[in-house]
Length: 199
Image (tube, rainbow, N blue to C red; front, side):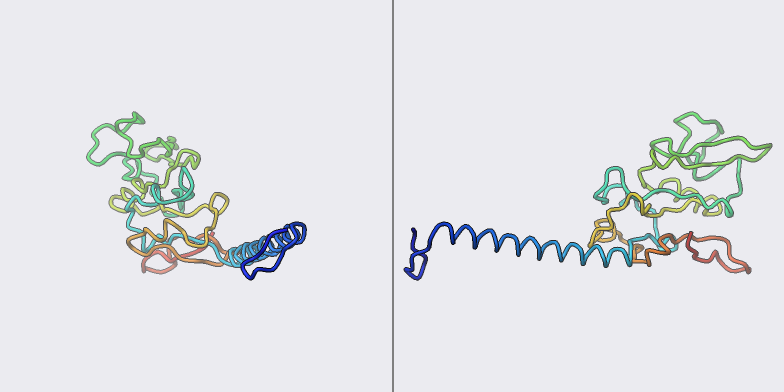
């Protein structure tokens, strides 16, 4: 037997039993908070709005996942299938081949495939993509903007406070409904700019 702060004697068995009960209640409370967060997380997920994205490169370095859960996505309906692709080749390149020194992507995540003269198809190997946005920046500067960054929901932990969102200088991250988790700029139906749509 030991004495508590009020000088009363406490039986060790009673103390341990009470401690186990309190630990169980605290654990149950933590589980309830976790379930509540997950329930809220199932309703909304983090996504990047490509209309606000400045391709700063922080998606690659700020994400808690390695590599980042942010990946380049190709909106084929916008692509010109150009021989000289601003998202594939380094600026001012004179040689249009697949040599590493001519590619803009640091991990060779973009694959270039000849279709027919003068068209090429560009596909993204998401396993190699780190979300740096270099290809997206090049595509927006010298192309149609068909390369865009998106949070891949199958990779994202959907953190309560997204580290990438916290470090995004343009405020491009937002919570979107989980049943429509992707935001892409795609060609509009009129003469205006591309409209934001979900895929």
